[in-house]
Length: 163
Image (cartoon, rainbow, N blue to C red; front, side, top):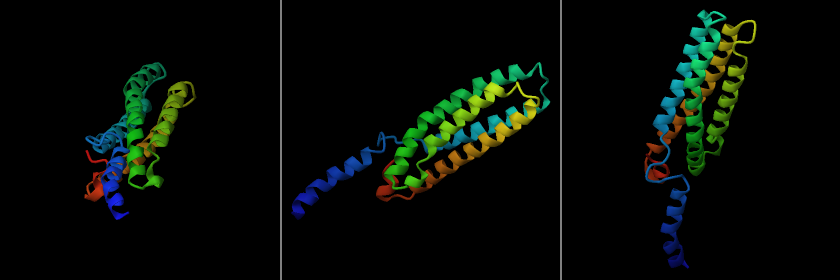
């Protein structure tokens, strides 16, 4: 009986490690955190620009912002799947919420793009939007930092999704 358990242990360890995406690379938590910072900075810059924008300049700023922000949010959403998988692999089910937050970011962005220039105060809308995006981006950056800290700890948990 003990021999069978010992023979199965290496296979079980490989299976556990492989469930966290590509074990040779794993999720790039540093790039994820940097992307979150870029999203926060971009939404803050958009708010600052909108605070000075005329009604005529608003559509152009919204187009510029959409072109900058939509690819970043889409990339973060794509990366969030592996980030959540690794959090789950490491036993942190309560922190595997990155995809859900990215989906909220995407919805917030689309809502802002739809109404950003239509209300009576586009600057106030841009400020509200920047606050919401900044909060969600900070949450994602915090999760990336947490993951980095766990992965730097070494041991089996630290190697589960190591970059």
